[in-house]
Length: 261
Image 1: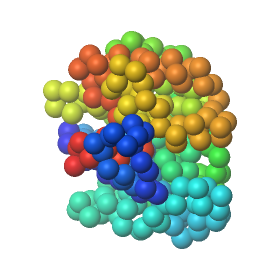
Image 2 (image 1 turned 90 degrees about the vertical axis):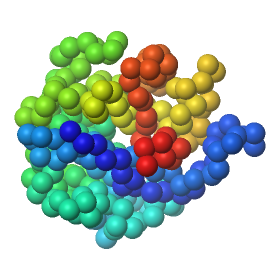
Image 3 (image 1 turned 135 degrees about the vertical axis):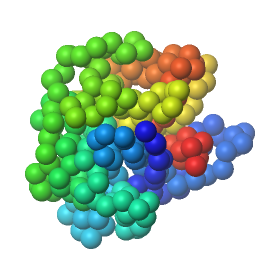
């Protein structure tokens, strides 16, 4: 397999959370998407970013208050479908999509790949995200019951995916949304774990004393379903990242994405 790291939802510039002493420079928040080229199951996306329809009809699909808050670039070239095409593939080559959850900046691109199987936990499918216009095309859901599956690096209920090599796993990382998940992808001799919106700044998982970005405070104020569960899962992610066997990253941290580009 080959893994490409894409930014499919560039947004407003953010500051590092470490304050003036940080060596990092401000950078636009990202929508970190994985494009996985498999040997037997075509192309697979982890998250889908902002889609073409979102850019054409932002008031309907993204909603004006969200656009004002996040200042998305709304650049067609940044969409997953256009980046897939730039790499020499077609939209039809994307046969599987695994969203970490169904919020607009993670699921907007689903409608650009209407024939792809969309893998997620049943609790997330039933919740349907906060922008149903993005799901009106009728995604081809492949939903997995919560609580069933195997144990993987301390996480229970981890699922392999139907029709996909066992090098891709759906990992319950609840708290942000009802069925929020991480997606683990084997990349050569290592595992990558896309943790979605379980956290939003690398300082939450790579420091002895967690550093939380103000963006996370906004998310919490917006109505997380279970803050305590999310924090417990972030503590697990912190242990996993320190162990060195799995590389952990989230959806919106531009400094994490820069490590892979």
